Length: 111
Length: 115
Picture 1: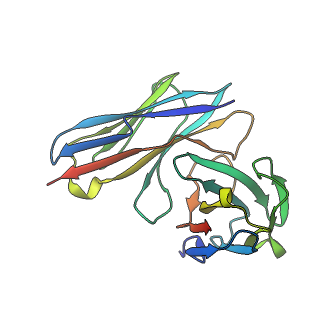
Picture 2: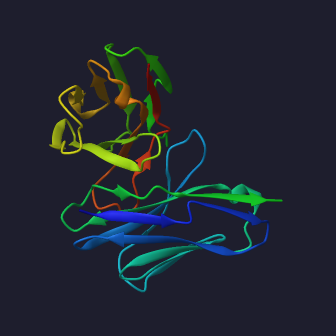
């Protein structure tokens, strides 16, 4: 069974203090790894899809990387508006539509 | 482009009652998905429609849950009769195809509380 573990569960940063979120996964074969951002009372908002080890994608202050066992979401010089829950999800090769999510990391950036 | 719309946003019902959740996907998206997050757990897959056909309902908890997608447009998820453990946030998502290259667009969810 596919499993996704995210750490830490919660992270508090000062504005400008860079850090990384971790997503460890277990799948029979990885079709894709997804990062989403979720604000309170909203649904998950798509950020990135990564497909193979070594791949990297960037968007503003966010950079996602992928290895064969884990993914990192690096946040450079975060701002208070980056505060949200960040969700990681995997898609197994046995399915081209089903996502298996982790519990998420709650990021708080203080001004 | 309008997003995925879900309603109601909140519903509080008594145990044993029936509740129907509705999802309007992005126009033109053939693929529609339902997910659920119960307190303290991760978001979990419930089922997948392609147009009006159920492709995979392996995540549906039991036969008290019934999903339909009439005419391949909006979808409903009915819970009858509701139990306490059905409380959670129900998300709908849609996509033009599968594979997720452009991600899946989620709605804001329906928070269901069964008392």
